[in-house]
Amino acid sequence: MNKMIQGLLEYSRATHDDVTDAITDANKALNAALEGLQQRITTSEAVVTADPLPLVPIHDSMLMRLFQNLIGNALKYAGDKPPRIHVSVRKTEGSWVFSVRDNGIGMEMRHTEQIFHLFRRLHADGDYEGAGVGLAICKRIVERQGGKIWVESELGKGSTFYFSIPAAKPVEILKPG
Image (cartoon, rainbow, N blue to C red):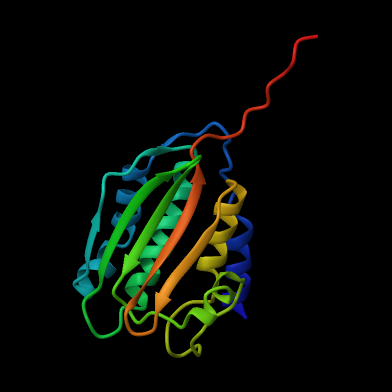
């Protein structure tokens, strides 16, 4: 019960830093997330790599939280082998699409929608630590920015989580007169 209450608090605070004119260096946000995960990265003998990342219109704490939750899940669901995690980005028409790819346990594609719902888990409580809140927080952050989040996965072969952030925030243009 305590995990659920804590999870609800985290979920409700997920976008408290919603600053509309914030521009963040995604490399710095990723480095901050990795710093917070350093002990788990070292313990699991993970290798985390990343392509150069752009400046994006999102508050730094929200982007860091996205990276921390997605990379944290890649570490958690690594299976028996050392995790290999890669962060990349590509520009599409009007958006930056980030990806976090891992070599973990993966999942069946039929489960890929439900994992973004609050308190939804694919595993029994004793199998993996957590309350089923992290991906719901990611979804909330991304959608508040006008983006989308999704996953492609294959059981036993790993997952790639994608999230998009609009390249520029819509600006209201006032007409003279």
